[in-house]
Image 1 (tube, helix red, strand yellow):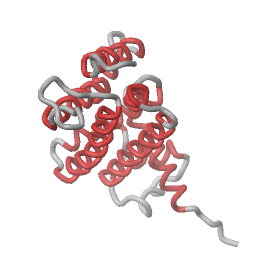
Image 2 (cartoon, rainbow, N blue to C red):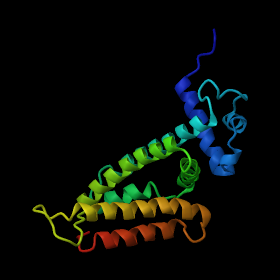
Image 3 (tube, rainbow, N blue to C red):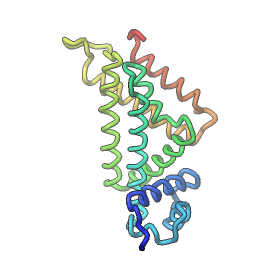
Amino acid sequence: MPKIVDHDQRRLELVDATWRVIAERGIDAATMREIAAEAGFANGALKPYFDSKDRLLDFAFEHVFAQTNRRMDGATAGLSGRDALRAYCHEILPLDEERLAEARVAIAFWNKALRDPAKAALHERSMDQWRSALAGLLREAGFTGSQAHDAAGQGSAAELTAAVGAVMDLVLGAQITATLSPGHHGTGQLVAQLDCLLDGLLAGVAA
């Protein structure tokens, strides 16, 4: 009988191999040949699944994004308020080897997105999901801002947008700084930086 191939599983194996190659050796080393070898397949095995390295990189970014989101769901389950917000952000911060590898894939993707509108649009859609989630988590954690409040005691939409932007800048920026300067941006430093930011944003909110 002919061997039955699980095409979805094969695709995921190739994507996992892609981000391992990028994380360990950089995007220039991520040729179709090297990715196939990393996955343990013959050269040319990628063609039935991805017609170009470009499309494979898109899929790798989408896979890493989905993987991060699954961890976020698990990390925040049963939590609320500041604890949920903090746990959510921890899944983006490169606090271990897995998340550091994901950061390297993200950086490689950003470099491509600078010159590729389709990749830039894919990135923006993904980040919009995180912005929306962070806005809800900040509200739940008691963020009120410093200006006039509405009837529910909430601050202005502009302040919330600024707060979301500050958190996004920290967690995404940490992916770069931890990759380039790990000695100054290790796990302890990154967690302390996040806590410092949250302390400022949630000043006056009971723990």
